Amino acid sequence: MGRAYEYRKARMFKRWDKMAKTFTRIGKDIVLAVKSGTADPATNARLRVLLQNARAANMPKETVERAIKRATSKDQEDYKEIVYEGYGPHGVAILVESTTDNPVRTVANVRSYFNKLGGSLGTMGMLDFIFDRKCIFKVKNDGKRDMEELEFELIDVGGEEVFLDEETNQINIYGEFSSFGMLQHYLEENGFEIVEADFERIPSDTKSLSEEEIADVEKLIEKIEDDDDVQRVYHNMA
Image (tube, rainbow, N blue to C red; front, side, top):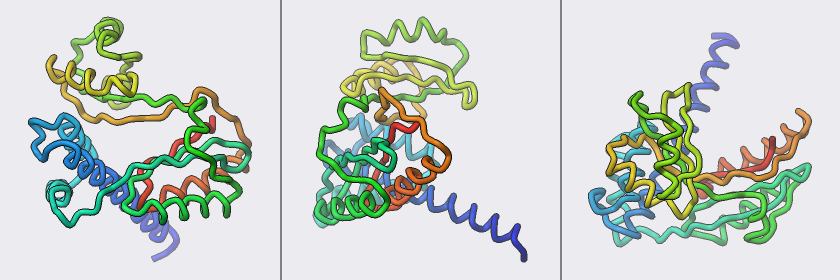
């Protein structure tokens, strides 16, 4: 069928792989939320947001229900959230968030990726001076909100930055990591429709690289992201 067909097929499988990875990540987050709270979104604020994230990612309803059921099962292994920090090729800082039922396996895998692809795994906390942990909410824009006024209103509940994403027509709200609950409560109480909410690690300092150097770092990041225990990978490439 030719080269064009093979290219389309490759893109299709890559998209499916990305969707599967997203579903796995949200599924693990749901398990953790249920285990630390309840299986009822009405009484579990974190779970309520994760169900919104699942809808935004077009995650099948039955997949969500399986994750909740798995969390309440006695046979479900306890997940541990572990952060790994290190430097990739060309001095790029890389921070890896994982959710694993086998930390020994996960750290061995992550260390091997760093070692094989020109990096080195370091100690927990070594990159605290580079990455600031923030929460982010994406809410529907009803066209009635002034961004400056909304930003001023949100200061009291931990909001730091508010802006309109013109591409998605969604309002993005950034706040301190510890302000997640207060921001969620304020948005829900004031009639905002939360499309998605999550945590991010934002680098305070970035590193510019050549195209060849970027390719070296991206090769390592892709290898780490392919690991089933890895939830998110952050870096400080410009």
